[in-house]
Length: 213
Image 1 (tube, one colour):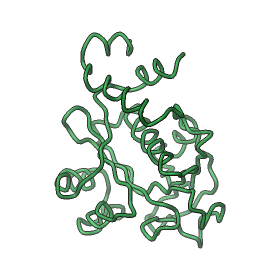
Image 2 (spheres, one colour; image 1 turned 135 degrees about the horizontal axis):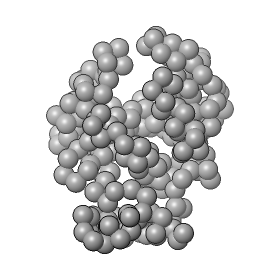
Image 3 (cartoon, helix red, strand yellow; image 1 turned 60 degrees about the vertical axis):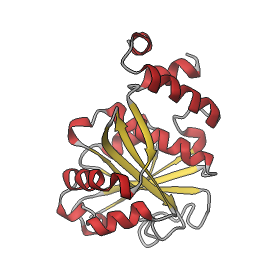
């Protein structure tokens, strides 16, 4: 299968990522955060605003058509905004400026199809690769199957299981993914911009159905 056909057939054409702007997306971000997380895991509004507005953080909003359905945010592993904990997390890569830490991943419950999550994560990693990051790390919850999905479908490697992560009452896996293993096309930014234009222009038409069925 060609890279173009694979990219056009993998995900609904209505999906897109765009840079998150607190002034524009703040209310939707707060709604997503309050809906997706229980109290002990939820970011307060001022913490969430600080994360999204931090110039060191790459934060992206996930849209399906005109509806914002999720967001993802991360920063270089060396940044203070990263949730990497040198006391519990493997030291592999610590201090390197080529590693990106994915801090927040949220999708509204009614939109939690595997292809929505896969699109958001893989596109985020691809964009990060253009910024020079060759490895991605994150903590993923075990109880809801997120860690297993990342390992099985997105080719992350499980480095360590952390019991009662940050005293939240749940175990999380610390995962890593190198650029060479990532499920991304490796094409240029111009190539992806062109394909994205095709997806956004012809979403919902017979052309999408031709590729997606």
